[in-house]
Image: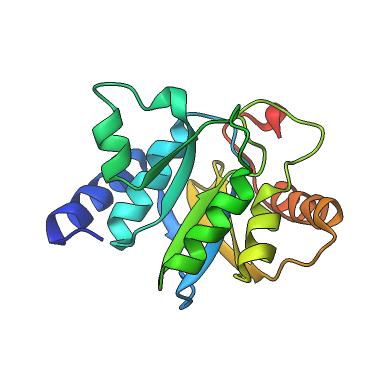
Length: 183
């Protein structure tokens, strides 16, 4: 995605904020990117800086209420997918169908589903990956080191809640969000 100008803008954002990218983007045509710990609105800005700097297209889910003028066009151009959390249609099935229709698709999902502390992560990111038969790329914001870390690939199985807890433990023990009390 993008060009030399947008990559330069992404690098400038990261440089201005003092952030860097650690790890490598996997060479897979389709994946779910599970990004955590998501504790701040700054996470979005940092993630967008990284996406622009890398020159990749990663779509992301966001509540439809955030897609209002004048931000709607910008969010859509940056890969935003508005989600109606009150819709009767299953979001997991909608996203899994998108994977079947496209040759290449990366979708980022924050497993917490919010920036607030939750007792259990939502399992939709694993259900999407399992249904679409794509790997999960684990990604973490680490505020103490000012790094966005691209971790290992995870292959989702049918034990969604158990796996979500394993991934939560892995990411939240290794990395610290902007507001650790919300992890």
